[in-house]
Length: 288
Image (tube, rainbow, N blue to C red; front, side):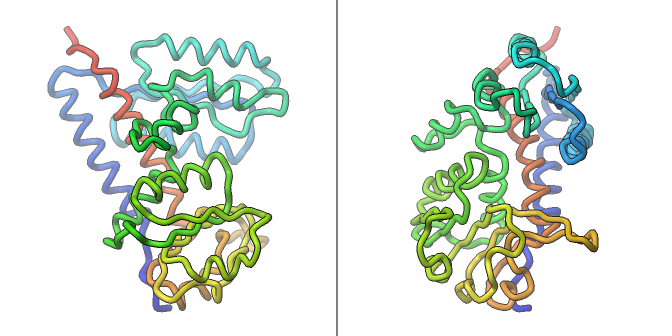
């Protein structure tokens, strides 16, 4: 293997350490700790794991977290009322509604109900719009984390040819905006893209988020390119792997993220960062 490994665990740990120091400094000045409210609808096992990771990260850095777990049959208007409750709570700086939601609930309606200045997932159209206008505030966590990983390599994004494989609202589209903000030249690929291997082979930076195990083949990677694998899949043997053929891609890439231990830890770390930034945006007065 010739590629250098981008250690997402180490980068995320450094970010969490900085956040903890900032929160400790706030409390030393008589300011309250940031507050994060999480709503987990139903009992989806994967969602429960993700929320548990977020709760542990909050404990580590000093964010006060509240988790509500309504039943899966909650009506949409009831869920919106929970969001409104946290929108109005001055001790809550960030609100996260864990996705996916049950089919009878419109995810877009719920996302847009969250106050933009409390939207720590960065999914609200207001926050996506600010990123598009190169004036970001609360940024989508996974793409934001990818940018931090790219920064950790020391490579230059300005003028680099970047290809994003996958055009979802959660990763692909905001990832394109992040890389455009960083002055890269971007191509976003979807299921209709012609000659996908040829497009990828020209890229200095490849970000893959398609949700299909080993979709991107190692021989498609340009020698020396940076490969960021957002996918995660558990095989029949219980082992995790990503959207990229890791071993083959690592023979050609200059840098590559592992699965696990690459992008995953960064998503949670940037959620903590967004919650701190939301708290600072609210600019509350010191406690009595």
